[in-house]
Amino acid sequence: MLEQMGIAAKAASWQLALLSSREKNQVLEKIADYLEAQTDDILRANAEDLAEARANGLSEAMLDRLALTPARLSGIANDVRQVCNLADPVGQVIDGGLLDSGLRIERRRVPLGVIGVIYEARPNVTVDVASLCLKTGNAAILRGGKETWRTNAATVKVIQQALQECGLPAAAVQAIDSPDRALVGEMLKMDKYIDMLIPRGGAGLHKLCREQSTIPVITGGIGVCHIFVDETAEIPPRAEDHRQRQDPAAEHLQYRGNAAGAPQHRRHLPAGVKQADGRERRHPARRPFRPPRAAKRPCEGRAGESGAV
Image 1 (tube, helix red, strand yellow):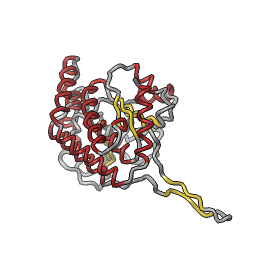
Image 2: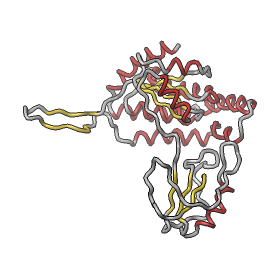
Image 3: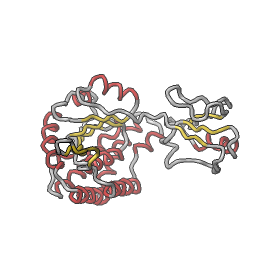
Image 4: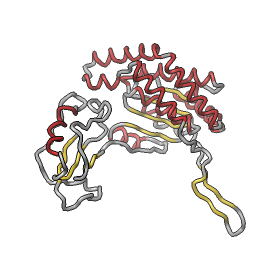
């Protein structure tokens, strides 16, 4: 199965690489329209995934992460339209110069070809990755989390319909529509067809890809995100990011001990911040601020406070 997907994706990548910015944006607009027009099909698949996840005992916080609603799908479609507004990187000159011989040398951005992405069970990531790959002239082979494999398959089907409507091959965006974990290992060896592999998930997934992949791998984004509040900052009664209860954007809040309003703000945090399993994350007792060893010390010698967000 993966062999045929790779062959088709490689062929599609040559067509995508030649598209103009206008043509790529037209495809993205069509995808956004189709996502809104076929919301019911995607929601039905998502309901099946949610039913199975609930039967398997996933927490309410995790179920909310997996869930799609008409409003969330509309937001995902609007995100695709926002990608249309991004500058097209293909063809951009990033370096160059004139040699003594009179020959001009330039380095330009070009599509990679076929990008393989392995990611956790997040339905929105399927569309995010597909739209960014298409914007940059790349084909995509996606492998999302097993908890949302039906949702991913239904979403990719809609994307493929939009591609074909625009005269492009459906193979430009493909998803591995099976929860079989063995397929991940097979995907890691597809260096004949996949030009770049991007894992999105925990440290275990990144380690697996680095050690077993025969494809160049880009890793990163495993967290360790901090918010640092200076003493001059005005702290609102509650600082809570969009859907932060289910999916915190940052793991730590760090502020200087004399930050105005810090103690009051600290009392509000645990009530509004949840872990993935639904339990509250409590701030530890006051202690000196110690940045990670690998990081530069932003305020060496200054007392502060650190706690999980």
